[in-house]
Image (tube, rainbow, N blue to C red):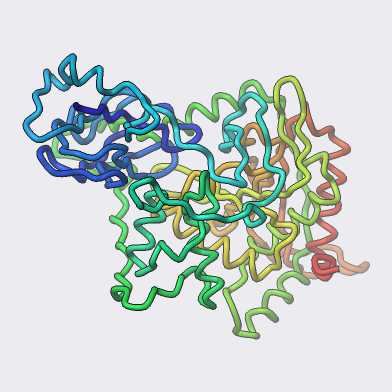
Amino acid sequence: MATKVVMEALSPTMEEGRLVEWKKGEGESVAVGDVLAEVETDKAVMELVARASGTLLKQVVPAGTTVPVSQLVALIGEPGEAVDNGKPSPAAERGTQPSPDRNQASSMPPAPPAGAATESASPGQAGPARSAPTQPPSAQAPSTQATPGGRLKASPLARRMAAERGIDLAGVPGSGPEGRIVLRDLEAAGAAAGAPGTARPAPGAAPTAPARTPAPPRPAVPPPAPGEAYSDVPLSQLRKTIARRLAQSIGPIPTFYLTSEVDMERVWDAREALKALGEGPKVSFNDIIIKAVATALRQHPACNAWWQDDRIRYWHEVHVSMAVAIEDGLITPVIRHADRKSLREISAEAHDLAARARERRLAPEEYTGGTFSVSNLGMLDIDEFTAVINPPEAGILAVGRIVEKPVAHEGQAAIRRRLRLTMSCDHRVIDGATGAQFLKTLKAMLENPLALVW
C-alpha cells in the first residue's frame, strides 16, 4: 500500500521548501533513510529522506517547485501499484494511517537535536517560550541506537559526511534524539581520534572520498539578455526569510544605537605576536572581538537576553551568533559557550562554521539559538554602520574597519589604530545605561587584551 512522502520541516523556521533536485527517479527502489531529494530551506540545502521502503511510484512535484510544509511530494509503494493523479488508491490511502510497527513518511518536523534550544530560536524569529537547554550538547549522555531492522539512526548530513570521510557509523555514539547520530558526533569522534574534525576510519573501511566540491555561486543579478530592460528574479527561500525577519525586527522593535571608538594598538600587537608563533589557526580580529563580546556578556547578563512578548529570558549561557554573507543573503552561525572557549578554539570554530555556511552545509542546530550577534563589515572598508537586531535577541554589535588616524594620546598628537563599534539595542530589554556599561567593558577589554585571559 502506497505511503505518502510530504515536505518535511527540515529546519525550525521552515514554512515551505523548494525541491531543488530529485535523487531518486520514478520506478527506483527505495530503502528507509535513502535520500529522495535535495530541498532548499530558509537557511540551507538539506536532504529529504525516505521514511518507508518500496518503490518510488510517483514524483508528485517536479524539481524547482516551492512546496509548503506537509504537502504531498511523492508516493512510495509496491512495484506496479496504481496511483491516481499523484494520489494513492482508496485502499492505499487507508494504508497510510500511522501505526507503531510500520515505517511511515511523517509530516511532523524532525525533533530538535539534544542540547539545542527547543524554542524556534533562529535569528530573526521570536516565538512562544518553550523549554531551554539545561546543559550543553557535549554534556548529554551519548548512546547510539538502531532501528528494529538493524539500521543505525543518523541524520542525512551525518551519513553524507561519514561517507565522504570513510567513517564507520557503527563506532560513533549518537547524542541526538533517541541516540540519533548528528554532525557534532562525527566531529567529537574526530577529536577523540586525535585529528580535529575527522574521525579515524574503521579497519577495512574504504579510503576517504574527497569532499564534494560546492557548486559555484550563481550571480545575485543575472547578466542582461539582448534587448531586455530588466530581469525579474524569483525570491529564494533564504531571501524570503530575510525579508520576513527584517519586517518583524525594524518595525515593531524600539531600537536605539550606541557607538564607541576603541584604541586597537594593543590588540594589533597581540595578533601580530600570535601570528609569529605560526601554530594553529590564523586568529582574526573578528575572533578576538567575539571572545571579548562573550566575556563582556558574562559580566553584563542583562544584554544576554531574549524578548519573549510576555517575559524576558536572561540566558546563563553565552552563544554568540556571527553574521556570514552567503550567496543571496546572510546567515548567522552560532559559537556556543563562547565565553568558555579559548581564542584558539573560537578561531577554529569560526573558520569552520563560516566555510560550511558558504557551502550551505550547516545543520539547523548550528545557526539557531544565539543569544547575541556580531556583524563585521570592516573587511569591506566600512568605517561604521548600524545592524538590524535578530529577534528574539536583544542586541547586536556592528563592527567597522580598523583605521589609522590622528588622535590625542597621553597628552600628545599621535597616529593610532582606531575601531568604531555600534551596538543596536532593543529598548524593551536593554536600557541606555545598561548598553553603555556593556560597551564600556568591551572597550576596556579590547584596549587591554590581557583582560581576556584574566
